[in-house]
Length: 303
Image 1: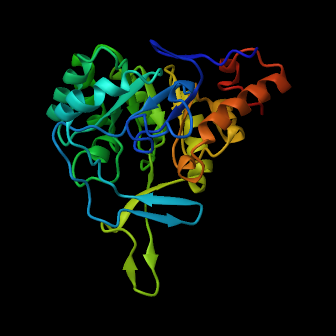
Image 2: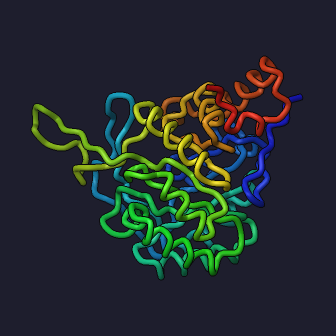
């Protein structure tokens, strides 16, 4: 039997297939289709310190080879999460990883401090890369000094596995990864969505209320794959790759480029069973190629 388990710092995942934040609710959105315990982990939808209503509608739009979204981190805040959501999702049978967002470093720190106290959340994904909010978010992830400052501040108060989510909307993704590694990140995840827009030629109006939004789906895969490869060569910490993964072959390509694990997102809007199909596809691939442990695939691209 092929061994699918992987380690991301102190996290042990039963397999490298995880769900991307913002695409899978709080981890129980799939129960009509499959058991979430089959997954390596779930990165839950973004959390903020206080309630956020998100952006005005329309805030999702289909585009060639993918989709645009500008949801804007809609959630009811950390207090509601702790009282109403946390008690039910700790029973899902897979690691729950909180996606942490703030408009200031102080907000990131306070939110991380509160999540640090939650016994059944073993890691956070520090989101310094969201392109859909008017302040904070991506602002911290587009320059090394600001990325270092927020990572160091959170590292000082957060004692479990710290994953920093990187923005692709930068000129030097490897430099950003090295910056947060030096500031205390235990792993990096990449890439978040690319800043894009869509118009309706007939009405001459944008398809999103915010005009611009985050592009995800198959259209971004070649660029995301390149960035994962660049970051893998630049850092010593684990890389979690994402960006247009639609099937097992895509996921394996990300691992060959350097990913220790992958996140699935937009594909689930097309077929909710994709994560399970990817896990099975990985097992079949490993059997065909005589691979004993899935970790052997990480960075195994041949030139």
